[in-house]
Amino acid sequence: MPVTLRLRRIGRRKHPVWAVVAADNRRARDGRYIEDLGRYYPLEQPSRTELDEQRVMHWLEQGAQPSDTVRSMLSKRGLMLALDLRRQGKETEEIREAVSEHREKHGEGAGEEVSLTAEERRKQALEAERERVAELEAEEERKKKEEERKRREAEEEQEKQAATEAKEAEDPAAEESDEADEQAEARAEDAEATDAEAADAEEAEASADGDGKEAQAAADEEKAAGAEETADEDDDKAS
Image 1 (cartoon, rainbow, N blue to C red):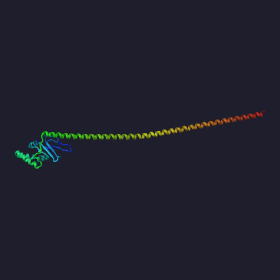
Image 2: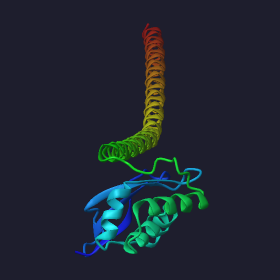
Image 3: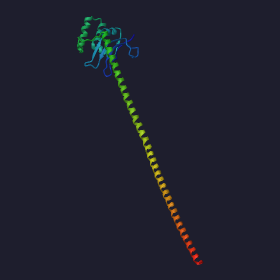
Image 4: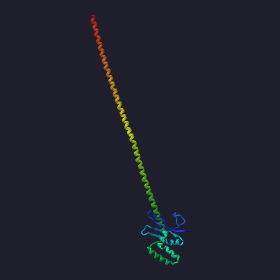
């Protein structure tokens, strides 16, 4: 089975941490791997690498091919040198001295911890997963708050629009009501004026009738007086 030693990202966004894994290179990069071999922290100053060197050497001896980045890391650690010396049949002590000298030359302290137990790798993987989940939850919470803010803004905008439309509908109704009141008042004033004119006409007519009756009575009295005088004159003539 063709195996590749490569990096697999497990860190948070803007804080990358890489796992060094042995993976079947015939599979797509779907996150599956055969064995977790260590960690690479590129943002630390200086960058730090933690490896299970025994398992790395096991896979290298089985023919696993490291990616360019992993090969550079292993070369810096002296593991590629150790593999070459083993293949040449060198003694273990000779290999250890050569690797130690190589690390000192490349700035890797001989006493630095470079190996991890399976339990330590498991703890680191769990911690990285917890950080990833916490980041996802924080992002989800941020999205919910943003959606809630947009929803409130939309509701406020709808309320403002409804209030504006209601006010616009009230203004014409108020104007129509005022106009109707004015028209009713004008009709009432016209009716009062008509009634006053009719009363004046009736009063004038009544006054005219009274004057006519008085004139007729005076004429009748005058006529009666004339008749009486004529009768008196006739009596005088007869005697």
